[in-house]
Length: 298
Image (cartoon, rainbow, N blue to C red):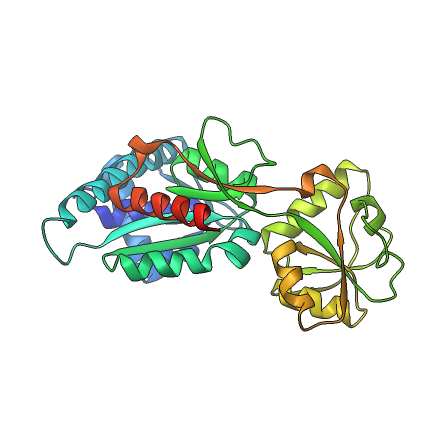
C-alpha cells in the first residue's frame, strides 16, 4: 500500500478538524472508510500518526511530519493541475481561502462570485477564522490566500491592501451613546451587547480587546449576521459593534444611530495575504490578481 492523494487530503482534514468524524466529513468520506484509511497509513508508516484523545485526535510527531509533506505534495499537485488546465478541459483547480468575519460577510461575496463566473474550472473553499488564525493558516500552508485585518501582525507573509474595514457602534435612537460624535470601546462595555454567534471570529477579536482593558463583554443576544445585530440594536435589545459598511446599509431601513469608535484598532484595513507569488498555484494567483483588481475598483 502507498499513500495516495485521497489519503493525504484525508489526513490533513482530520488533523485540522481535530477529529476523525470532522475530517471524514471535510474529505467527503464515510467515517468507516476514513478510519480504515488512517489505520492503513499507520500500518504502512510503522508508527502512530494520530494520538487518540478523550475528545478528538491530534497528530503525533510522525503525523506532524506527514502533514508537512502532505501540504507540499498537494500544493505541487494543485500547481500542476493549474499549469495543465490551459491545455485542455475538465481539470478543475482548487483554491483554499481563509478570511475573518467582516471580510466574508461584507467584502468577499461580490468579488468571489465574479471570479467564479469568469473561471469555471476553479473551485474555492472559504473558511472563517480570526485574523491571527487566518495569517497562521496561510503561513503554515493550510490555506493559499488569506484576507484579514492589518491590525494583526502578518509576520513574513506578503500582504496587499484590499478594503478599508472600520468598526462602528450601532445603538437604538435615544441610547446614552447614540448622540456621541465618537465613543470608545471601553464606553460600550458598560452596556449589554448584541453580537454574532460564538463561532464567528469578530466576537473573539472583541473579547480579546476587552481582556486587554481588564474587562469583559456582556452579550444579551447572539445572532447569525451583522444585519441581525443591527436589528437587535434597533429594538433596544443591546448595542452592537459591526463593520461600517454593514451599519450604513442597515441605517437605510432601520432606526439606529451609527457612532464611530475612537480606538485606533477599530480603523482597520483588510489585506490579502500569501506566502509569496512563488508559492501560489496558477488558480490561486488568478484569484489574488482578481481581488487586487477589485480593490482598485472599490
